Image (cartoon, rainbow, N blue to C red; front, top):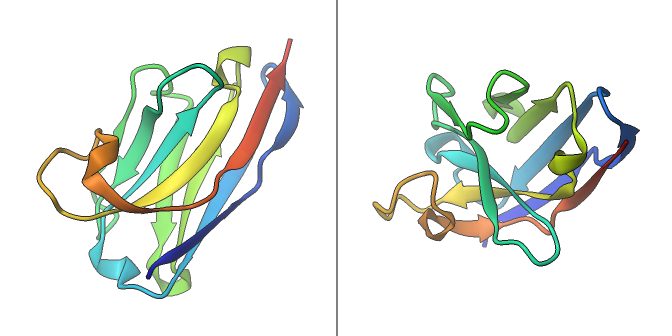
Length: 125
């Protein structure tokens, strides 16, 4: 029922920055924790960042901590991922997702019940 659309991906060089956006519709965005995940061909889906419904609490994977920032604008039903100091290993399809409050933990993909189609981020050397 919830529809998510990611945007902002692209081809950049090592050290560059990108800001991803995820626009939500059709659900209670303001009451749901949100997460960003990424996946490369041949690899498992990887947790990147999450943010609480209020926006007061955030969490990051060690691989992106200090470089990426997750935020949300509940008035616009949008969550963002600011990515700085990008590295080739950041290359992946990035997807946003809505937590279902299932109790698996917000770093786990099975905690999320709605997913966007993803946006490609490619970082060249």
